[in-house]
Length: 408
Ligand SMILES: Cc1cc2nc3c(=O)[nH]c(=O)nc-3n(C[C@H](O)[C@H](O)[C@H](O)COP(=O)(O)OP(=O)(O)OC[C@H]3O[C@@H](n4cnc5c(N)ncnc54)[C@H](O)[C@@H]3O)c2cc1C
Image 1: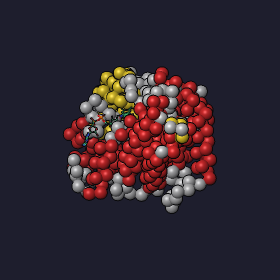
Image 2: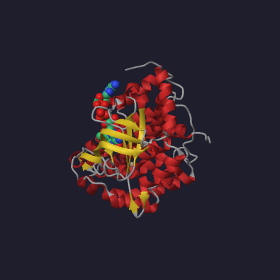
Image 3: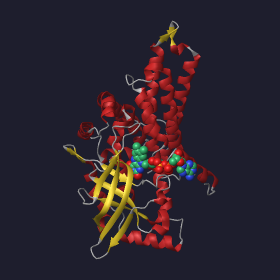
Image 4: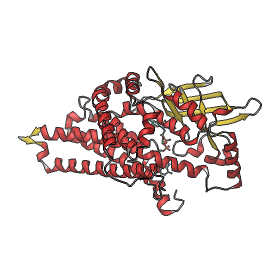
């Protein structure tokens, strides 16, 4: 499947956008302040999304395979325009689902992805657990170990994961662990930990600066035993990969390349979330600047304020173009020769921080209070230069891609 890159998403995708916008405006936005204060997962809203078909693997698959190539960013932008904390609670499960889709066998995909979402009457969430206290940007430093117990055909997992979205409250956890520490990232493998598995527990739940409706916690793995069938991709494939890595066959088909390609493909979706926040803050600021009067005229009458809004809108549109291009490239299997996926996430994340800070400035004292939503949006935007690869790591990836040099 291949389509020409176009800035017209087409009638079907515009209809989805309008439908999601309605949900974001009617259900998510009015609940945003409450769940931000409660710092709890908004289960009733996830359930409502599930009833409407917005919280399901089918929905995301449909958006991903939309011929326009921009189905996912459009969906993300609308949901996160509603609210980023609730938005992440709704889409956080997809992190784990994508790990299974990218690395799992057809049987594993069929078994685990439905359990990640549950049913509209009994919704579940899933967690993707890679980061550790000493392994954030430096994924190669992770210490969680997976040891194979051949007699029982079971893997035994031990370690502590941190900052896991939905960690501990998830039905299904996907855990990245080292099966051969000497091989660094090429000695990593991903495991599904089924619901209710003994030895997996939630550690500290973090109190956060932003996206507070999204649950973030440590996940402790203490002698967790999972069947051999929970190794994503299967043992044969892992053994082949480890053998290749040990022989030093680094590049073609190696995990590093595959993992990088997966990151490039998933980063535009995260960029689109940031654009949703930025657009929301920009709209509040534009509206406010038109109506707030000082010195006997609307504040937007001042070039100083109007130019701020012009910059905000320009950056939002530029970010969206980068995100749409990268998303289209991913769907159409185009090579990310200049790390275009990372570019889109970098620029969109920084744009969200810039725009929400400007919005707060335009709202003056009101912008600093919780009476207006830009204060929350400003807090929420901060995560977009940190998770899914910090802005510095995106620059590193882009710099390496464009130079071919092992830049450190
Ligand atoms: C709310 C939230 C949700 C998250 N959800 C998940 C999740 O679901 N699953 C999961 O696995 N992880 C998750 N994370 C973890 C997240 O991906 C990491 O926080 C992120 O990768 C950065 O790692 P770190 O925090 O250890 O920062 P560090 O890696 O310690 O970085 C600290 C600073 O040093 C800079 N730095 C580090 N190395 C370099 C370098 N080589 N060159 C230049 N600068 C560098 C970084 O850019 C950063 O500014 C989440 C984090 C948060 C806060």
